View 1: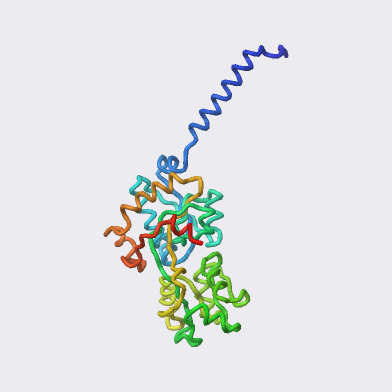
View 2 (view 1 turned 120 degrees about the vertical axis):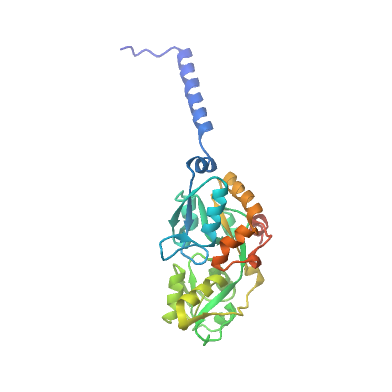
Length: 285
């Protein structure tokens, strides 16, 4: 076998062929949008928080956000939706790590989150409220009411914006009971480990219905209007083409009779519609 060095023109040809192959490989690399369209399947990440996204008693994944995602992707020719259950605080890391293609969990658009993911324009707006023991024995109607009494405890789901709102309002960390999900929020109030839980008005009303005669949702919660939540689907920063394609579908579909019929079972109606954009919400200081 010869060990002589190949002539220069042979090495040059080999190098050109290698570069050509690499270029073809790069050119053929699919974007997430192309992959999802060709496979007809998309993976959605969600956390159990009714009515936004949850597993119902039959085992079906449903809620406002998964149902919207299902309808929008169907319009794009993507019929198979594979749900991936994740704790709330792990949704963004899970998305960025490629465990799923989109967060469909009713996630609020906030400037810090905008640095990590790409949001569609919001598909709902909603205020917060408190879940308290029946009769609201501590007379709690705001974060300030909790902040002024150091003995009070507030259950907050880890990774939610309400954690920051509570701290901004003067609630001390030692007053905050962080829990992984809404079921734990309900249990904390029912068991007396917390004097109140905080979350979206629809979530707290849902927990009150589930909690029976022991708890209730505060109907006149006083909060900063800036704390109104705007929920959207979220994508990886590199998947701008996928986000843009979904945004285009949402623009023509949100507010339609079909959309309102889709979200009605989860307590949403025309009053939850908003004309805010992700760009405007991401740029807020």
